[in-house]
Length: 180
Image (cartoon, rainbow, N blue to C red; front, side):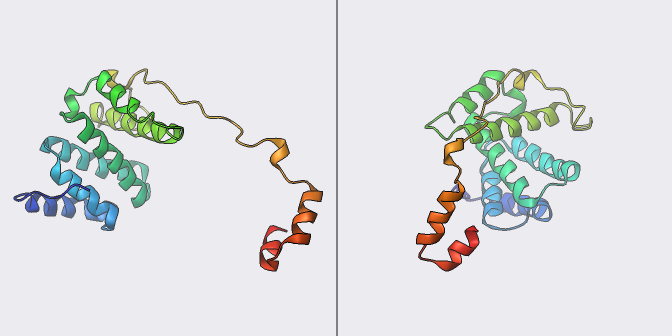
């Protein structure tokens, strides 16, 4: 977790006062406030606050979802470490590529791709409705992630005989009733 440096307490309190009605004050929210206060580029912090406030009005999403969006954008801001208006297509690609680790990166990559794309569409066209906003050059042709349509096979589904064997040998009657 990012720590607040000396002299940024006022910034933390100001950020908290602006965002508390929008995203709340639980542990994740406090983490957002700390990370916003610790951003080197204060215009990025102001931009993210404005985005959160407008996104909440436009989409009417849950506070917890907005907090996740903000945390993803803060992660992006810390990784890129430059003003949002100076971010290039290559910066976004490098950020997205660093997520491709292991075998469980696809969902995180897809969420970050959507979050960053939606943010930059808002950044370059804040006065247009969300559905009419064009994609800026920064986020054009970033690619998509393909998911397997089916994660199980037909042989994985229990047959009636499998169910009967389970019920016969299940030691917990509550569990066997739950599964019936």
